Length: 250
Image (tube, rainbow, N blue to C red; front, side):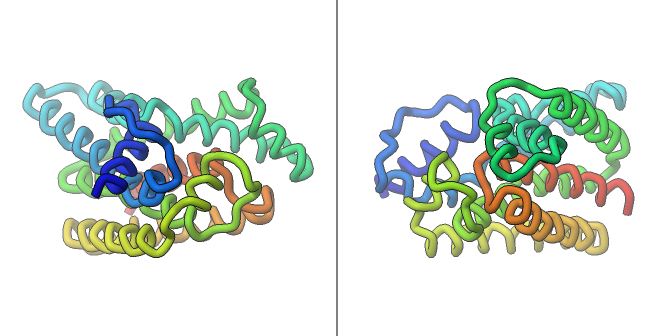
């Protein structure tokens, strides 16, 4: 139980800005980190629904409501996945050989493509949230969990681009069998949840998230030789965006 609790603390201290007690990053304590990674999506989704309720009671305008929707994931996670999205956008836009792409991922400087990608992403996400109506807010909220469940599955299943880095560390030291069981259970719950809310829209949201997962595998293997922590962040952001697009366009 102590190892499980410490894995929970490491997951939330690593992938969120929520205050957590200190836990040592020993090999045993990192076995189940990926089991708890999707639960950060529960926090984001919960905050999303709470704000939706508050905004409804206060009668706030669509613009303010949507702006807070956009900011909530960034505030809760500290922008760790957006950082990966920006780094990956710079690398992909460079059209350089694989070795140079990896150098760009590690570069601490922000490139023009990263800035444009981030601005475009947030603008599109804001537009999506202005179109949200009724129970479809719940599908978006569940999408924060589903995207992280897919990402956790990738960490313990996909080939790594390199043997160093956080993603490689969590893969090497994870109890892969337990993590996969936990992640599959969470994914099934998410899929059933969105389908129960709205069968057709929920089914489309599930389908596009799965297609994004396939794209993530093919793109990372072809462009980078495997996944990295930055690519994992890129996937989380893209997956959440396409779920949002599916919800408002269907």
